Figure (spheres, rainbow, N blue to C red):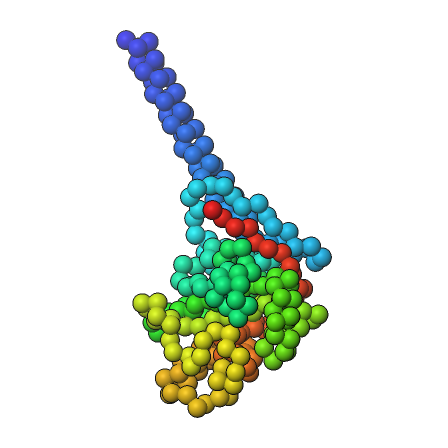
Length: 255
């Protein structure tokens, strides 16, 4: 009888050890998968060379959070959609629906520097409390695309001279508008990339609704460190990114 009880106890002890081993292995495996996503879609600025990290191949990717983004160096490029589901994207240069009348991005992606992304998320959170959200037309822009734009419109009022580079080329500028809770764009008086006085911030011969919408966008963006330019109601620069290095990398396209 004593031998039987000792054997039972020994078998139960072995089962408990096996069960604990499975739990520990599973926990470590999950941690490895999550950590592999921490470098997904991040462009590292080494000072001279912009390096694309390999994209993780896991089929299920957890959404990263603001706390994750805050750990990324300010001058590192990140994919904005990885950190928030609360934006709308209409990346015009990935379509022929732009002033170039041709597609110049292989696929629609919105990259910015980490610091820019953080401030965009904060601005958008403020807008969400009022029933609106940010819609993007353009974000980071490779220098080669800037050169194409300059050939078509060599006017520094509307297109930055590629010899100096745009803030878009530095990952610190975005072209945006506002949409309501149903995704409808708010009236802004002109379309995106309209080269005329009606798109200027100081042009006031517009319906009051349009003036109010432009003011809402402008005051919100300025509250989070962005600056506008006179000729384009849609364009905003993050002031602290003006001195960042010009980039010309092209992001990877996913199937």
